[in-house]
Image (cartoon, rainbow, N blue to C red; front, side):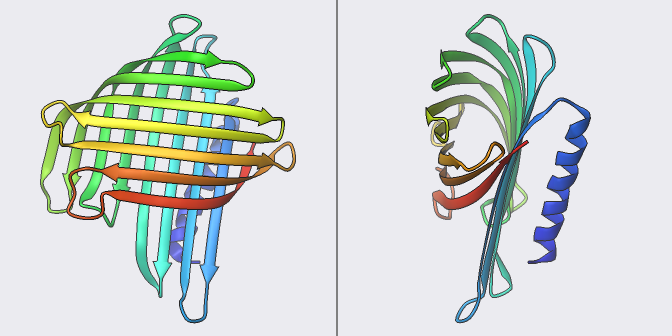
Length: 235
């Protein structure tokens, strides 16, 4: 395992351990694959989610994703993103939020992307078996290209989160996200994340996820796809 992967694991470990000072619900997914012989490849991916209630009506949520891959000791993927959200319930179903999202991808046209802004959410369905959460808002976005060019603009953002609990041990989740520039409709980003988890114990599960990140304006592949089998820890 490379030093880069080890350093990223250490960062996640520090974040997870410091959260014990608060009453925080944490969700960790880990995936690692290594092959040797005719080809020497290794892929490491992890996702850490944490949420805590600040009051009866407000909560804070943090999410981080890391993907790193090597092929014959050469990096072939190095991508991570961080998302922070503050939510305040205005009624039983409607809430306001303010979010920040930072993305860095070494092998894309962008050195980094960041967008931040307020919005409203609506809990269309909120039961033990199913939840449907809708969000929409305005973001201020900054795209720093690898060429050194920086693009700043205002964008509309929409997101749908769906969860279906089939039984006590089987759960399906689906996320759809769309961000488009108000000034240029051809400049947009989409993401889809589909996952299935099977509980083994109270804290451990096995999961399969399929994620698509789509960038419309790029000189490289528009769609970045990732299929992973992960060990999931809830603590």
